[in-house]
Image 1: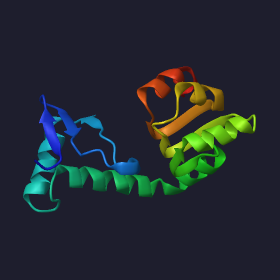
Image 2: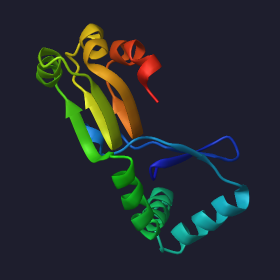
Image 3: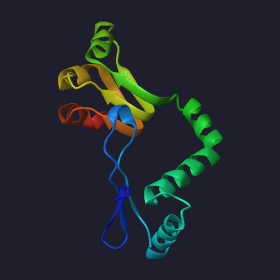
Image 4: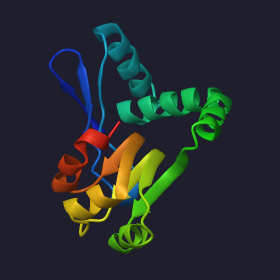
Length: 148
């Protein structure tokens, strides 16, 4: 398969493997049969290697065309752009300083697997992630009311 599988008559599901440190996330999109047929035609004619290649290229082109708006919004909202990792030691230092974190990330925010739900609640005031949040199920559940 080419990284995308047809599910039902209109659903396309990315089947990329989950990579380390936020390289990719799986998404689902719905396409009509005409759009899907046009994608398949472009792949068949050699413009793209597969459906995934076309979809990634289209998304990157749109992100590039809106790049300035993205940069301005990131600056205005004080977002960390890219990967932000929080280790147990990081959170323990925040706790020792008597502070609370407001995590704001455009990209990937990750909380180490050895962070307990209690430590997360004691040190993380709020979480806003445009992209993906990687944390244990227990930490996500403990922070559920603080994740926006």
